[in-house]
Image 1 (cartoon, rainbow, N blue to C red):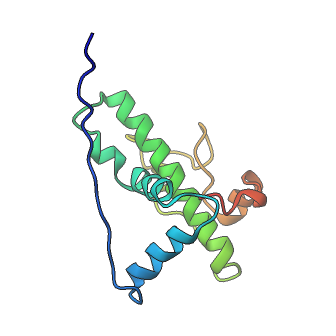
Image 2: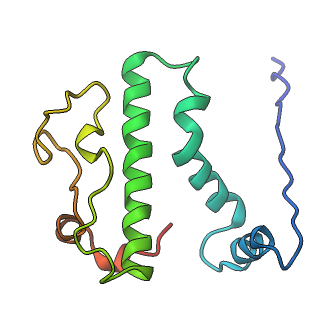
Image 3: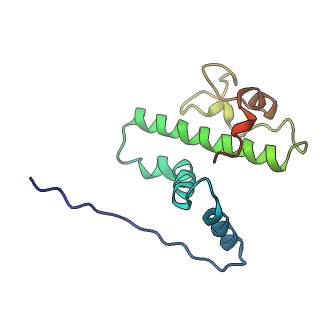
Length: 135
């Protein structure tokens, strides 16, 4: 029995060392906890995966994937606010948080049916501060 040939895809990133992009890549390379490949893929999945899989998945699977992406992005927004903007916007409302379920009517209640919390105060109650830097 012959195995099918494994196909691979590769992306190479380069930037000037002192540019914003260079500093970002340097930061990712120096992270002792998460390898750069894993960090980049996690961020890319949260940001682009629903579009990348649009043609391959059915509606239910795509909605589930989109929900997961929204949760990842909202959690990262919360992490950034807690670390760099604490006190600047304590009542920040996540745009469209009450619409995080695809197809939900605009009058949908913000905290029912497992909807994510909308304000920083609500998020603080749901998230363990010890996990804020796990991205």
